[in-house]
Length: 404
Ligand SMILES: *Cc1c(COP(=O)(O)O)cnc(C)c1O
Image (cartoon, rainbow, N blue to C red):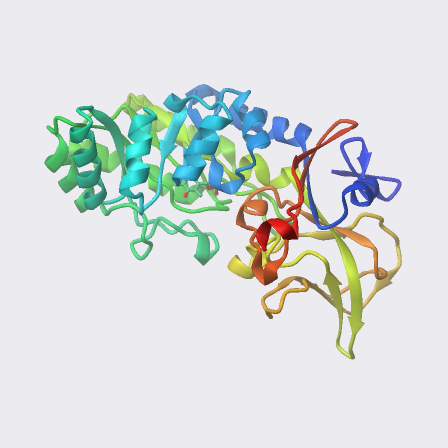
């Protein structure tokens, strides 16, 4: 994503030409950014040699998963559908972990049949269910237990997952109780302690607290874990107000932890790998002006990109052709959906724009397409992968015929 002579390019292709060819709204990804993200994630944690399992819920496009797989990366899945698509992408089952608070009988059975690395269980009831199924299959199954470390991840309230009030994982006391109960199970190997305290974390200190809690509970448990799965959650810079995570510090904290604990670290990054690889190109349908504001009515709505409506998060919206004429008036960027929360951004000033202009909503690669829906019976946008000067449709625009 870069501007040349005030025009947006995705790698070597002008955004205007992509919009012209595929229409709007359209998700456009840069393969080069994806490759760079994976490389730098690996470099950041080189010294601890972790198993990296991409969080498929952040982006479940098959072609993207295939690209990620080429880097030897595994998958973190949270449903049978995600497990199926990860396998279809060619990801090694021994690099797949299965998370989630509500895995069904059918999902657990399927995961066991596919011999994945770990089922990360989140309750005693779930472990009972896993034990029952593995007994039936006469197999010994490797599982993890997800600890809820009761830590404030200092992120948006709606994407925090590691506090007592959140539904995820089990408390330290329950964790120890479960360990005692299943330690000698003939059908379960408790191999992993897992955590995931939330998403879009940009401060390393919650991670530091999390590691301290893990260290303490491992000591208390006297159990030998093969893996410690630290989850994902690494934040990205969505705008100038957000900073990015200090990976050096996080890496150092983990290194220290490993000096005393001989385990393999697992990460489950989603956003940090895929978020900044994509823009959503959208056309201004109408501009409606009143005394106070200009409403910029876009052809992309909350069904295409739900994050602002769901979490109150903000994405930068930048015209694909910049100019220097600034209009000092409130601009509300809204979609066409019949909901007041169908609003992306409100800015005090903006460059002069016109109806039919194309804008790019930035950093939409994670939880963008993945969260899209057919609300208002609107078809889903296509996904297009840009690789240098070539374009590839990696998911076609849905047709009304297919959803009616
Ligand atoms: C969502 C999720 C992740 C990925 O989080 P990111 O913030 O996208 O890195 C990892 N692990 C679990 C268990 C999750 O639910």
